[in-house]
Length: 150
Length: 150
DNA sequence: GGGAGATATATGCGTTTGTATCTAATATAG
DNA sequence: CTATATTAGATACAAACGCATATATCTCCC
Image (cartoon, each protein chain N blue to C red):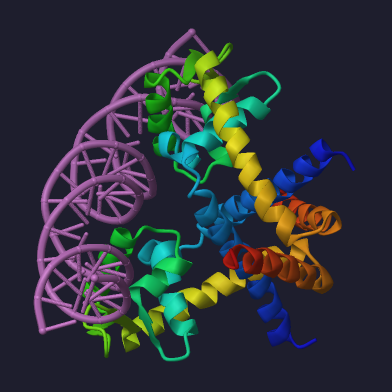
């Protein structure tokens, strides 16, 4: 395989992944649930449900969400003002802030998440077989692990 | 396979794709070239290089970029003000606007694109074999085609 | 061919974002 | 132990975004 073809394959597979994300996101955004809770806001709440302790530091959130630190800081302000999350000072490091879901926040995440999962299911199910989904999961995990270990 | 496991597989593979896009994007954004030309701006210029005629309608751009119509309209304003693209009225439809690269815009896209491709190469090459890239390309194409035909 | 509705893009306006910078707290070096 | 550097998060401000809506053109049906 020539160097040029190799380069083309690498960029094409990335671009295809990127465009697929755009296409699916555009489709998911049609869901009315995303009106009351934008996809970035949802992402924050979702990440909070996934962590074992129930609390995440702001900088940990920042690693998972494609937003700058100040943007997350202010988004957390808004979510707190809406009563969906609450802050507390991190023990042992008074600079740090821990974020956790309120009951109301957990309930809203669950509700929006349900609609969200339903839509994703419908999209993925038609497009790929179970084996193909497993392969996709495996390949994307590989990329992520590789990027993380830099 | 149970319905619950099936559902989990569909959402997990999608979330993995999404998180991979975030992780890779975050990495690509470290590239200094993206300071002078944001990734969305780059995306516009890139799309213009890919189309055969060299001209794209605003609404065509809108299909490929994850932005609302007004945002693209204004982004095109800015790119035009910077001399990177130019507008012309579409022939046969005086509502329509065609966008094309200027020489300067084409040159900048090429320059930024070079650095961009180099980084993508380095990321993908380490993570996946050629066969795996081909598989990823195939699977993401399938998803995109499926979503497009709704 | 004239008016109702559809389509393509632009603009007003409030909200959210990113860059740069600030404050407070912790870690490190001498 | 103090001074300096580093890290976590917050804030000021200009730029960019999305939603609603305006404007211009086209399409279709009578």
